[in-house]
Amino acid sequence: MTITTDRLILRPLTLDDAEASRAMIEYIRSCHGNIRLRSECAAENTASAHVIEKCGLVFREYGEYTSYDGKKTFKAKIYESR
Image 1 (spheres, rainbow, N blue to C red):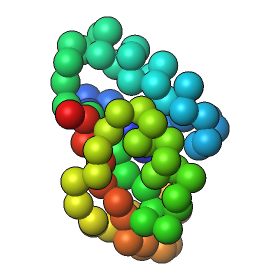
Image 2 (cartoon, one colour; image 1 turned 90 degrees about the vertical axis):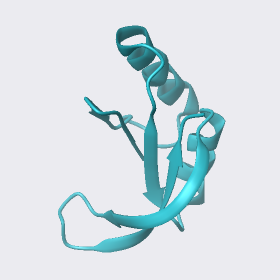
Image 3 (spheres, rainbow, N blue to C red; image 1 turned 180 degrees about the vertical axis):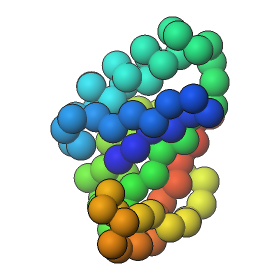
């Protein structure tokens, strides 16, 4: 799972930790105001999708997600803040 803004790209240390992800979102908003957040995960990664939804982001569309090493491309679910 990745959380992005116009200025930041953040990755929680544990993908299944909604509490850490929510804390990161709170920190981003305390520094930058109520800005639009975007998150994406591999479409088949239901655990990350669940964490993203628990953080209050909503599904917007499907797209593509490239692995960190750039070797594979996956179908992605893209979420945005309300």
